[in-house]
Amino acid sequence: MDTPYRKKQGMLFIVSAPSGAGKTTLCKDLSGAEGLTLSHSVSHTTRKPRPDEREGDPYYFVTESEFLALRDSGGFVEWATVHGNYYGTSKAELDRLFSMGRDVILDIDTQGARKIKDSGISGTFIFILPPSMEELERRLRGRNSNDEADIKIRLARAVEEIREYRMYDYVIVNQNLLNALNELKSVVIAGKTRLESLDEVWVDTNFFKSE
Image (cartoon, rainbow, N blue to C red; front, side):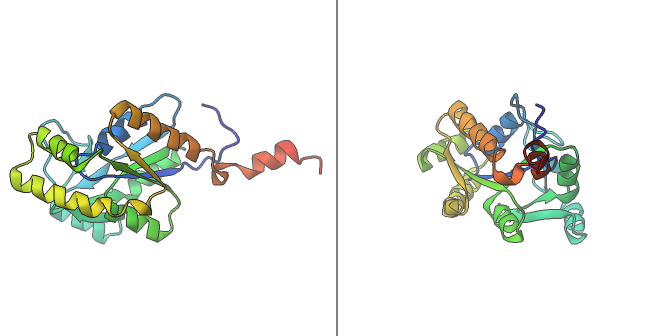
């Protein structure tokens, strides 16, 4: 979509949710939505891929030594330890997407979102809630990829993450995937009309050139 009145620099959208709330699915579906120049930034992780996952979808899977080398060289905008594994957002990945004029959606946990907010990086922060803890547990068990001990850890961690919802600009309850996706898309569209995304040179040229 041709929007000469918008700045060429893309906008950043940060999405967090407890494990099992559906944020990865929502972010992937949104990045392919018609009418949006939105890319889903792929994070690095040291966790092992699940049977239905592959390199680059939904993560770049690396060893702990590879991750720590990137971290120590300043290669991450943010990084965190979640469920005993490292996760991080690559600076190079963000720079590549922004250089293409793309808006970027980050699928990260609350620790990473806090680091980005505290760093002063401009972005729109969105939190995804499950409809209930009972439904969250049902979804986790439905994956058939987590053992009982891991499910209990994820549920306990979910409570900690949900306590952070006030840090975010928007909260979406994922009771129905399609409705949640439409709400998430609406937030992104609204974000694109924020004052800071408007190209002031375009305004001056089109409305004040005779002054």
